[in-house]
Amino acid sequence: MITERWHRISVKRINYASTEGNAPPLVLLHGTANRWQAFQLLIPELSSRWKIYAPDFRGHGSSMHTDEYGFGYYVDDTVHFLRSVVREPAVLFGHSLGGRVATKIAAEHPDLVRGLILGDSSLKEPVASDRMRGSFGGLIKLIEEQKTTQNIYKALQEADPDGFNPTYGMYRAKSLSKLDPNLLRSIIDNGMDLDSPGNHFNGYHPMTHIKHIKCPVLILQAEHGMLSDQEVETALEKLPEAYHIVLHDAPHEFLTKPSEPLLRALLSFLEAIRD
Image (cartoon, rainbow, N blue to C red; front, side, top):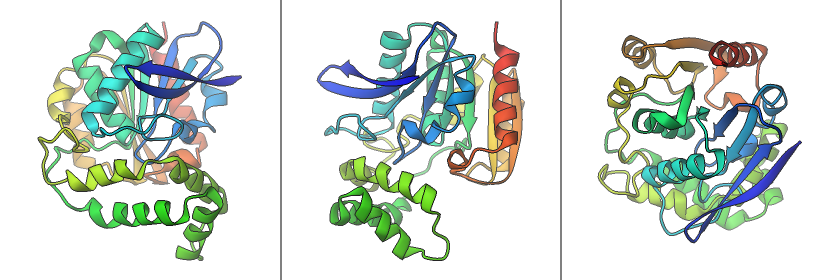
């Protein structure tokens, strides 16, 4: 059984889901504009041997909306969560944004991390960019105009009638209905300033982080995702213990339709590093 709870960080409240029992901890970290339910189809298998913790980042899912968004805040919140709630070294499995957060934590707080799984997370050095203005600007308009899950669902369907997936559409609509649009504004407004605390990559230097990671790492690369072959090759050269799996014919959002190869890769890695 999985239960949702609150974790308080100062005046903020972070929502998280967790399973019962005393198994070793596995912490699931979702991507931008998602929520812990991104991992829901995997949790029944993963929880047979691991105690699952799955927080919603601030502004996502059922966690509180705040006035401060940016990569560093997600890292700080997660470190606080690991120290205060998990309270022992955990395996971190992060998808996209969650993988970037996990990478920085594994490098800077090695006492908190016993293993790392990166789900199609960029390992490229960030550059100042305004590229998210178009897509995230459209999402802001969608969220603020449609508001409810049902209305957002209908709008997503109308925008792409031929390629629309109803199952993913329901999940996506619910996630967007709970997302703070000011989080997306922060990404847009701070995109050209990597030194701003509100930047979506502020303080993220993947190849520098990787030099300091000593725990075992599994890199999951979606064939049609964001992670390039060159990024993977460079990371594998620098990491002391790393494994690489290509998820063939998989998109960046591969969690929404988990495959047998994905599940086998996860379970094999987790058993390999288990005491």
